[in-house]
Image (cartoon, rainbow, N blue to C red; front, side, top):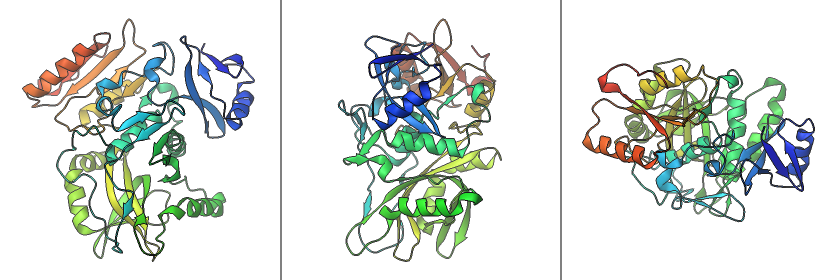
Length: 396
């Protein structure tokens, strides 16, 4: 059982009084420590669905003992590795992650049309000094622990929990000197019995995106689940679940977006149980219209775990029934021509397992990079599915 040090006391994780202790520590801004190792590992307290939970600090998962629930596989196996120390830097004093962005949070001029779709080429740049919009979405998902799954959580992860996880993660991130949570908008689950309260909180949250006079307009960042797209007079409307208004996208931007995210859109349309997640920078015009400036998307399964292909989804489906934890690797800024770990099984014994899904047609450069990645993490046992060679191998 995990031991937690809070103030000058130590508690077992199943201690009956832990919730009241965590509430007091949350209000007093005390930082708990996990005693799975010495020296103990600092953590933070999050409030989620009325409960107080202890979460690991950004990028601290590797500092925990492999047997600890807060342990996280090495980030060098995913697209996160190249970003550490560059686009993502940890403030030692606060423990927050300082993000350097490759997209703007302001827009000049009175125009209401978005400037670009966020990723204008067929591939995402292998950029390490700044974080792309898609990279930010992946990092929010990663820090929010939404990449992790065990069958014990079945039926317990809906949009309300996803939203709480994202907002808690954003509070551990700093953008241009302020918490990311100050400019991140994630819609609440709509409930008819709290319609007026939700409307008031939404208006307060969106105040920073309102157009105000001349000069550059400030933009906010939205994350939400796309319900559908519909045609507008000049462009498209993106309808987001739990919102009473659409996001407007001009036609040229929609054309580029449709080409750039063809794979994600195709995967989303292939299964009713899948969700399409949007991240966008946006402003609200003087007329009160929410206008997208840049946008990126990813597709997730019914458990809100991201996937890139039907083969990854098949692997996720096989693992979703197991009680052992799996952790999804994400691409961040890396292109599809570069390998990443698809999933890791950190609790597997005698050694954690790194699972790779190699696409059909992968060339020599891909195989060489994959071999170097596996060799660099010799403490983990590799499991490789080369899609072009046949069906999924037996699970470890």
